[in-house]
Length: 402
Ligand SMILES: [Fe+2]
Ligand SMILES: [Fe+2]
Figure 1 (cartoon, helix red, strand yellow):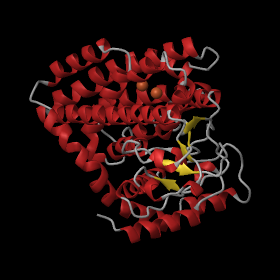
Figure 2 (cartoon, rainbow, N blue to C red):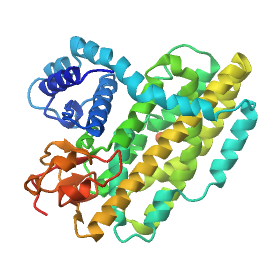
Figure 3 (cartoon, protein in one colour):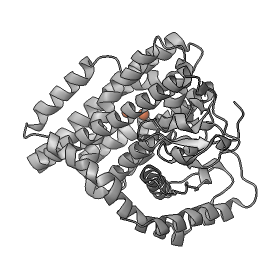
Figure 4 (cartoon, rainbow, N blue to C red):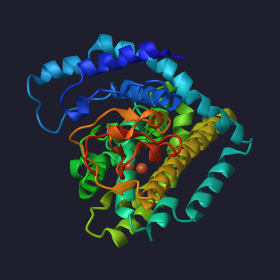
């Protein structure tokens, strides 16, 4: 386990290299004392290690030399230090999550399993979030929080899986590349999936720049982001990656249809093309992953490869479920606090963030510390109300008057 002193030193170094624009904001929180905060900061640090592998430019030219900015943001010495930490953080935070996924997979032939998975996901009931919000008077705040938490990954959609496409591995590689170019709008920038996601963010009053929302990500959102990157930033996870794609494309064809209907009905003025496009294209992507990637790999490399693909899919299912359940649990805890007069729904304020705090850590706060901002939901007005929030929640002190 990486010690707290090393993490604090890394946090200070990241803050020192941080640029003034959202995409080059490298800061992480400081964990002081409680286990939940320590876990959150470890996930933030792991996210920074993964983000360092991408090309990121701000939408508007920054003050000063852009070359100097790049030299600092992608400084090879600093990146090597983060890489060193990455291995330990992955072993501590992500690798243990593979154990229940491995235990859940049996010896069924791959083809039978894939057919059953597709049939099951297609027949699944409406996704819990949209079903819950259909009659909810505060649906806008909850949906805004869903978008904000999802933005950790979706504002750079398909950059993680792009890392699984480069290399040299036969015909399945070309099928994966065809899926990838769909994700990037087939070369048309306006249709790139991350660009479509930006439009939904803007219509809910959220900043659409990559990484702008990091101070408000809860631990579950960070864990999901890091789980996906753990798969794709380690080539030895190749067959697990295929399992991720198989599950994600299959689940997405169904969930995005529910989201598209939900937005059309309850927020008809919102640009919902992100969801409409996925409800259509992921039908094809599911078939492509199964027929042109997974099955040919199993035919060529045998049952062991098939089993690893199934483990990857199960690993992904559990990760999506944990993130989805945590989002609902935090939303319900916020509703209960609001009902008790101890929270108010409000659009997040991105102009000034105070220190982050876990529900455990909130026990040390007093009324003088002021309201605590919770994701995209609003503010808990007294710290004691936050102490009962579920594990994985993350708040941020703010100077806001509510
Ligand atoms: Fe996509
Ligand atoms: Fe897709």
